[in-house]
Image (cartoon, rainbow, N blue to C red; front, side, top):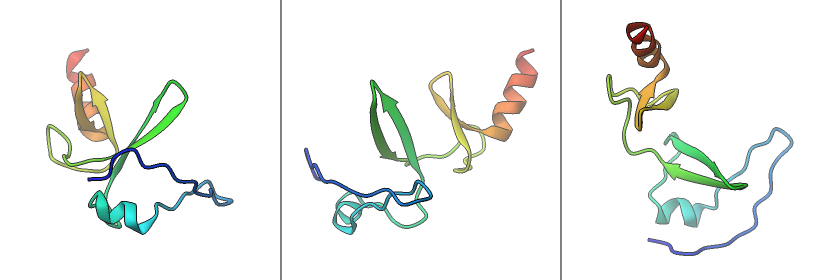
Length: 83
């Protein structure tokens, strides 16, 4: 596991960044994996998602609801049942 790595990467015209292959390999990130984007105090963090929706297991369009990852479809169902 890598610790305290700093590198400079470039953002392209469409706002995409490319993670260096060595970092991807070290963190077992593969093409198609989902990453969580976290912004804390102006710092952007990326974290590999190792789980899916707490209700259905889907790994697309995940959001936090009461500290659980939930897909948007299940989130709508939860919100409808709460009101």
